[in-house]
Length: 181
Image 1: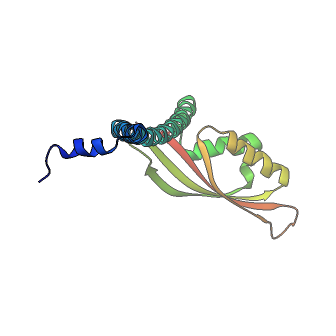
Image 2: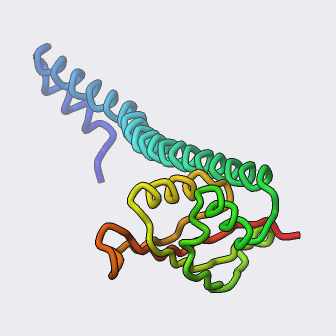
Image 3: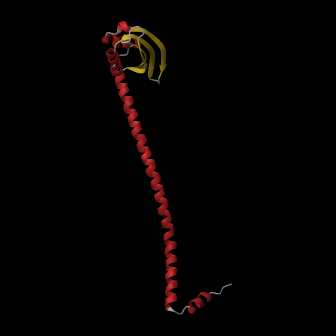
């Protein structure tokens, strides 16, 4: 066992002022480190947590922008569909072809069926074959289909006509989005 007088004896041996001041300075430095160490560790932990929260915030902002984008697209689509009269796909395509004078070029119209997109929206899909188109008529037809508010062009196949190399044949897959009643 150590006697309580031992530290005093040790200090008594250190008679020089220089040795005493070095020990006091060493003890003061150790005390300061003991007091500051927890706050340094806490600050580093807080900085890591802050970086993690900043990353989560950036991810949340990106998701928010994406949500607004899709919400606006859905709103635009609903407005487009609300403005257009609710007719069948045959009547809608007939209107497009008649306005361009291509009704006689229509070879076949084959209904692929209809399906539900969601609880409020349905979709009718049809394959259309068109003969004897000039390049200008083709461009006008594609432009008219693109500008149509309810018809969506899903696929188009274009090839030269067998009998006349200046004319084109086209097969379209078109869908009509309608609001369910």
